Length: 370
Image (cartoon, rainbow, N blue to C red):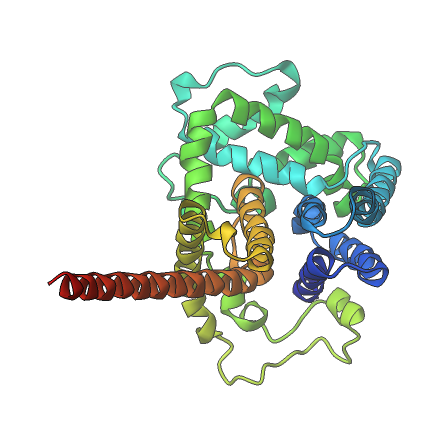
């Protein structure tokens, strides 16, 4: 659903760039808002929207108004969500997930810091920090939790036996023993975000080496992860899933005889190739000044390249790269990368034709002189 909404959103961006109208502007605002409510990854969409309207044929005032519609709707959703979390947890926050993700990412960097080099932390972090250090000391050989070896993953934020979950439970055991799972999880978001940012700022080089670089590699060739097996190899879903999707039974089945989704095994390789083509395609487009050839083509490449770069930045720095999160970016990048390959091939053919023409003219000139 999110991938479908994202493609409609991108198509409307192209309409608003090349043939804007009141209808395309209005529909863009609606689709942007819907996509924004579906997935955390859509946080980058309002920024890309501003670039698209900046490229459009509209007057400046119309550009500002057109871009504002969708962004205002997203802003209202953010404020409403923050208000509801304030009522529920006592903290203003848009997404608790970001806090847990930040602490998770920081833990990958923190593990690589030598125990002798781990300095003191502010008092409010000491209990959590001591719990994490104790965990590192007990598992420094990596044999207790082999899943830790999967760098730049989400292992620390979802595993019940990990320090983040254990610290959360220890807090609520004293603070609010009757609190539900969601409230406990959501309430820890701001604190974990603060702690994660503190560790990352204190050890930036370790963070770059042990999270950013591995996550960059994973972004270029995202792992299949949970999509490798249909329903994670199980033949049933939870009662919640049954109700949500309107199933008649918790039993589910695949049309494939084997639950292993073998065809997706090739996607990391294909995606890696496409991302490399995109990287070098954009590089050559800039170096060879491709923007001077065709204005329509140039604007399409700019907005497609913006999606690719914003998504890469967001995924590498603030998320975990996985195939399931990259459905829309991968498909869009494939299209833009092939357009760049086609442009480059046409440019090379044109250069060869010009070279032959010059050679023929030189030969004819020599004959005439003789």
